[in-house]
Length: 445
Image 1: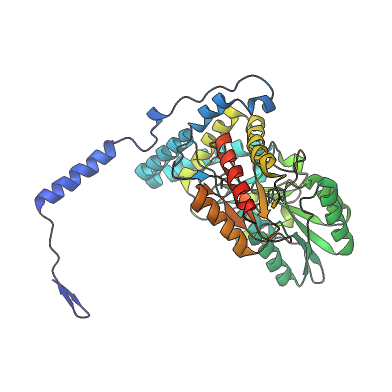
Image 2: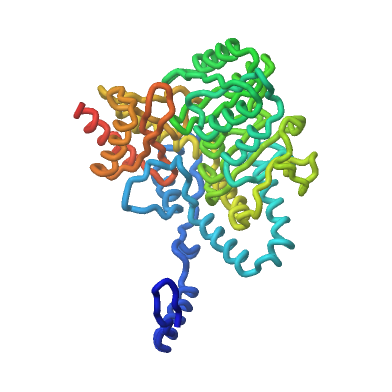
């Protein structure tokens, strides 16, 4: 009998027949293959010969790649920018890693996991083109960048930190927090829309000239708002020439376009592995190049790692072991396709829908077509309407009327917009469906 606050009821054990049935069902579930079990995964097709731009249009090959993903048929998902689906081989490996961790517990985590985590870090370092001691695994780009910005030591009273309208909102907030603590000010750059490399560089150069006490500049390599890819190396050089450090938000970059950290010419970088590399959600990286470690303070006075090691600059607590263990699986899957082929395919899908609507009255494409300025992500507005309600309504109409899932984005100085992001499991028909829907919506005025 249990009583309390007017309650009086009796706990009764279920009948023995129900207990036996529940036990039988649980046992059967344990023996049933998981969703997308490895035995059901078709083999990964070998890439066809030829340059990446030719492979990008080989639909037989990409249908084979698409079958590596367990994608719902409830909607046409063109919002891959939030996070990337794990391909089936990575998902199955992730399940196996979870099972192992749950089965072997702390005995495994304390004895064998450190070696696997170090191997994952080394694999990431190789992928990025840096040394393992310049890499720390995090739970995402946001965590990495908040550490790099929040613990940056080079800003003082009267100094300036600089952000742009296309930067990620959480990183803009982090820069504002750094300025407030240091007694500094925040300068904001409005980037041209759609713009080109020269115009973007000119905007940053003018802003740096106008704010000569800028000590830290945030650069978003690929904007989550419009998909614009910045000429980061050129901007970083201009900043350094004026005495400013650069921290690069590369959350959307690696795995979407061919890239190494050296290409960015930056010493402080945060990025994701769960957007375009196909790792489980919760996989990110903080990069601090040799010689730059002293510019970032130790995290929370942490003494668990030596002060001369990057691990002392981030403290994530207990790790999601299986996520880290699955990173090499994701890197291996991506390597089997090749980043150059992957980037060419994503750009082909992006160009397919953009080319179909760029000349349509009322459809404003916010990202340029120039090589190196865009990858998979592109945003648009209808009839120049940049208010939030209008763009939310467009995204809703695309979903409700046409079954196409996109997302509205806020923050660009020119107004809100709708973001479109195809993935490797997308196909030309998905892009054509979107283009047809946009022509219909634009015609309504």
